[in-house]
Image 1: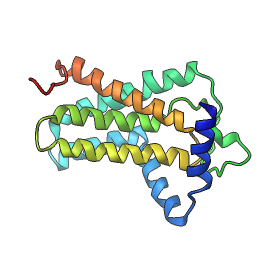
Image 2 (image 1 turned 135 degrees about the vertical axis):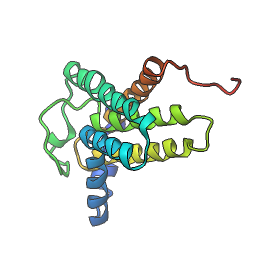
Image 3 (image 1 turned 45 degrees about the vertical axis):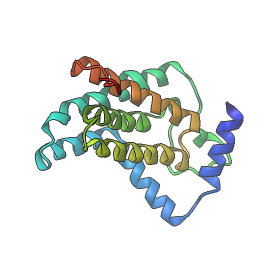
Length: 179
């Protein structure tokens, strides 16, 4: 895995630098913060009247970020790429790298929205959130704080969190094409 991580990391972190990229990925890294996601969800609750989504999204952020991402960080000691000499660092972190918590919470939000809107015209909002979550994931590599496999791990944490909330909080199994 290390050759993959190193090659993709260098391509994104070192080989893709631009002033636009710096601002673009700073924005997406900020959106990937769990408390920002919760604040946007609460704002959406009142402004867009998305009341049925509020608690499932907050639960997905909490599960993806705390027991899943932070739990894995506590058990998987992995140095961040920000400690490497060649890294262009835009953030400094001292804690374990695997998985990306920003990516986990972002994909947790996208997953629960996709599952809650599956089979409706509103599923497009979930897919749009999945694209945003992918931007968050790439931002963590661009900013020099996560390896690509950390981001992939974050994706799986988010998918799992959204599925857990959908099944246990909403009492539903994902719909299949035949149902």
